[in-house]
Amino acid sequence: MSETKTIGKGIWIDKLAQELLEREKELGRSLDLIKVESGLGASGIPHIGSLGDAVRAYGVKLALENFGYKSELIAYSDDLDGLRKIPEGFPKSLEEHIAKPVSLIPDPFGCHESYGMHMSSILLDGLDKVGIKYEFRRALDTYKQGLLKDQIHTILQNSSKIGDKISELVGQEKYQKYLPYFPVCSNCNRLYTAEATEYISDEKKVLYNCHDTEIGSKKVKGCNHDGEADIGKDLGKLAWKVEFAARWAAFDIRFEAYGKDIMDSVKVNDWVADEILNYPPPHHVKYEMFLDKGGKKISKSLGNVITAQKWLEFGNDKSILLLLYKRITGARELGFEDIPSLMNEYNELEDIYFGRIKVDNPAKLTKSNGLFEYVNLLKPPKESSVHVNFRLLIELSKIFKEDRIQRVMKKLLEYGVIKTKKPEVEKLIELAGNFADEFDQQEKVEIDLDELTKKSLKELTTALNSDEELEDIQNTIYQIAKSNNVQPKDFFKILYQIILGTSRGPKIGPFISDIGRRKVADLISEYL
RNA sequence: GGGUCUAUGGCGCAGCCAGGUAGCGCACCGGACUUUUAAUCCGGUUGUCGAGGGUCCGAAUCCCUCUAGACCCGCCA
Image (cartoon, rainbow, N blue to C red):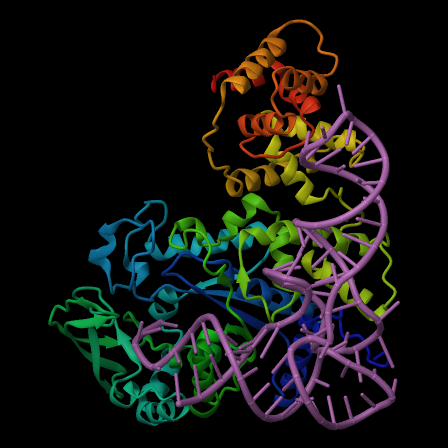
C-alpha cells in the first residue's frame, strides 16, 4: 500500500481526473482547455442531487487545474425540456402550459423571464452560495443559434441506424419508428405534440404534424398544425438518447458525471458520439441518486425537497461540499438530519489538517487532508475556525428560544467551549437554532394536573413572582413539592412539560434563572 | 425483462473506491455532581463486518459465487 504514489490530493476526484487525462492522451486530443459539463434540469425544483452533479464536476475541474491544465465547467440548463408535471406548491394555472418548453412558459412567480429560468436560477444561486464558478449555457440559445445543427443533421441522416442501435442497447423501440427530434410547434408552442414525420436533408428541415398525445397518463391536445422546423434556428430539441452526444461534440466536453437513472441514455449517447458523430465521448463517472429518508414524515410536503437554499438554513456551505466530495459511491438516503454530523465532521477534518488531531496512518492522513482541501475548493484557510459541537448548539438552541444568540453564547462561555464571543459562532447558533426550530417541534401535550400539583404550582409562581432573593430555586421547587405531598420526580416532569414541552431538560433551577423567573411564572399560570 | 447500489454492535450509520490492531451517534451500564427528577462531565460494555470460496504475510476493504433488501430503466426529459 505504501508504494502507491499519491495522485493529486489523494481522493477519488484526483483519480478520476488522472484517468481522464490518460484517456485524453491516448486519444491524442488537445489539452489546452479541458471542458467539464454538468446538466441542470429546468423543469423541476432543483434537488441537492442536481447541485451535486455540478459541484462534483467542478471538483474534477479543480483537480485538472491542480495538475496544471486549464479547465472550465459548463453548466448547461436544458430549458427546452417540456413541462410534464406541475411541481408541488406551484400554481395550478400552469396546467395550460403543459408540454411547452419551460423557457417559453412565463414565470409563475414573476421574478424571472420564464419558468425555466426561475428553476435554473435556484440551482445557480445554490452554486454561487457554495462558491462554485461556472459558465452558464442554455438549450434555448444553443438551438436558436444553431450550435448543434451539424450534429443534428448527421444524427437525423442516420436516424434509422440509431433507432436500431437504441433498440439493441436498451430495448427501447420507439426510435425505430420516430425521428429522435422533437420540434416545438410554431403555432401552439408545444413540444411532444409535434411529431417529426420526415427529415428533408437538403433543406435541413424537419416536417411535423401537431396532434393529441399522452404524457404519462395525461392527455395533451395538439393543434393540428402542419409545419416545418429548420434545425439551425427553429426551436426543437433532440431526444435525450442522442442530445448529449450532439452537445459533447459541439461543445468539446471531456467529462460529465451522471446519475444512475440516465445510465441507459449515456450508454446510447456514448455510442452515438463515437460511431455517428465521430467524437470520442467524455470520460464519465456514475453516481447514485440521493433518496429521501424512507417512510419518514410527510413525504409529499414541499419541505422534503432538499434544495441547497433550504440546506443552508441549517448548515453551512462546507457541510454541503463535504457531503458531495467525501465520496461519490454509496450515499443513498439523505435528509436534513445528516447536517449536524457533517458539520462536526468538517471540524474534525480541520483539526486533522491543522495537526490538532493525530492520524497515524499516512494514507488516511493524506486522504483526510485532501478532502479538507477540496471542501475548501483547494483554497484551504490559513488558520482554523472556531469549533463548537453542532449537536450541543442544537440542544442549547432547543432550550433558548428567545434572545437565543446571547443566551447560548453565554452558556458556551460558561462551559468553556469558547473563550470569547465571535461573530462566526453567532452564525453557527443561528443555523443550529433554525435546525432546532424546524425539526424539534414539540408536541403540545395535554398536562393533567391534580389539585395537589396545582396548589404546588401556585406556590411556586408566588415564590417566583416575589421580589425576594431565591437562594436556590432548585431547592425551593423540591421543598414545595415535598410539603404538598407531590412526588418531586413528577413535579419536575410537569415543570419541564410546561416550560419546554418535554419531560426532560437541563437542571431546572439555573435554567429558570436563565429564562427569567417572571416569565416562567407566567407560563405556569396559563395552566392553572 | 435489463441494470445499479446496499448488507458492519440493540437502533441509525462511518470506514471499503489507493488492504495494515473495527469506529461514531443514540441507547445501555458505572462513577462524579445533585436533598431520590433531569441535564452535564468522566469512564465503560456491546460486533464470527449477510453466506461461501479465492488472492495476499495480512481482507470489513480487492476478485468470484450465492442470499436478502432498496432503487433505477423498459413513458419522457
